[in-house]
Length: 177
Image 1: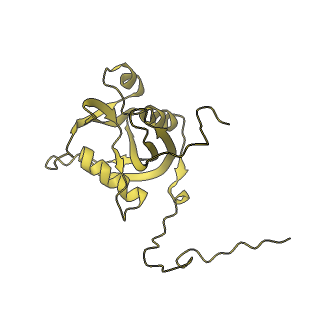
Image 2 (image 1 turned 30 degrees about the vertical axis):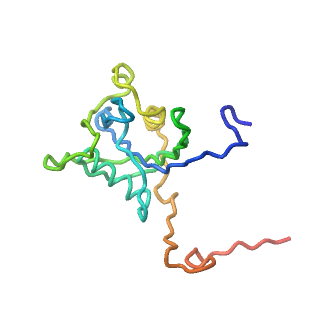
């Protein structure tokens, strides 16, 4: 059994989230925000809304929280973290990519204080806590070069597929025996 893994208990709630990891000249785009009554730092991140793909959610959340347009280049990784505060399990899909200049006329989401660009050492030495350990882990994975092609994520819209497996790819696996 893996350390910290309890195979006997299913999480009460699983939240699927996305995050954008954008770096410019060694500094990372971070969002200073209010969460659970405290000020924290996070990547532009949030929940996937019904009908959205993971990539669409990452683009939307980055725009809403930073007023910057985000163009994903790679999947950085998939991260699972259980909040000790309420037991919620978060499954985070983090993407790397490029951000444009902020739109000065665009309001930021409620609870967002602003954008900050920090390198890893400045992030570690500043007093504002990180929203979760996933924030630093994503930066560390980025810095060691972790990247996966965006096409490693497959999205099927089965809402109009009807019963059965209609709408799935037509490739078949044949077992021989």
